[in-house]
Image (tube, rainbow, N blue to C red; front, side):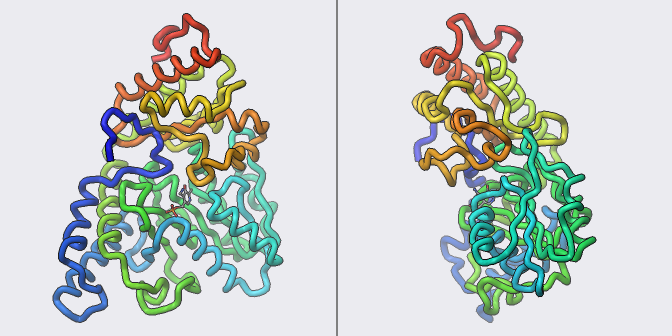
Length: 396
Ligand code: PMP
């Protein structure tokens, strides 16, 4: 795939496969094909790869290896966790969640609502946040499950998952968190945050697509979506050995990245891009809270008042810049983002918004190029004054 000269700022849609993850996969793509259940020396090699990956994943999340179930991605982890909790919740019929979850959760909740569950949402404010003080008032003896994402994939806003877990415990409800948009961007320590289940996706942490992990806390009753023997009877199907090996390596690499401090550099670049746009585009506004500790450091979601985000994005694409009008899963539908609408934006404001998600390889030069391309597009579309230029007004 030709990617020379492309500035890729769409890491929340997917990340490139890291060379280390690819190297970990190669032995199982080119020769090492044995089924991990096979009682042969070759089977032992595959088994060891799966087991080592489980250890890396557990170290990444601060849990124990047997608490990791390998899945086919974030979607499967979310669906499995939610359906398992409900299958084992007795007479309880209520599900509490946020209105800004990923479609893999929203659409399942919608279906469960039609099947008779009472689905209620914690309110989100204009910054896309849930106030932890609202949590306990809504949960009660009928609550079967609380579903709260760790970070929002469109705005990067972080949620009070620890508080939700405490509330869930206090009323005897299960708590699931979708950590797909948070993993590798902020530390996740399941020794201190008491959720029962948590999902993540390999292709958002520089691992392969079609891979994921579901954390299931020790002692949590569990009903598999795919009954059978693999993964301690929690997810049957022959293990995706190369995928699992690649994701484990990607998790290990993400752990080093998080502890190296480089994540701060990504935040600095994100802030530079954001400040420049807000300064240069009259009426531009930030979607999502901008204060320390309230967002993951690599995402910014900006509304360009009076402009179609789609149009602006086309200009950027022509200039070699890749970003997104919303979550990748809804691209093409031209429907405004349910996340932004839930935050109180009008349809037009939501459709004027673009998401930029930076990655480990994003450079200061690429951010400067993005700002230049945006300003040029803004001038062409009559949104930015002729004299405006990056750097004027100290935007850098
Ligand atoms: N949750 C969130 C927050 C996501 O961003 C995504 C991916 N767009 C998913 C779940 C689904 O993950 P996967 O693509 O691995 O099924």
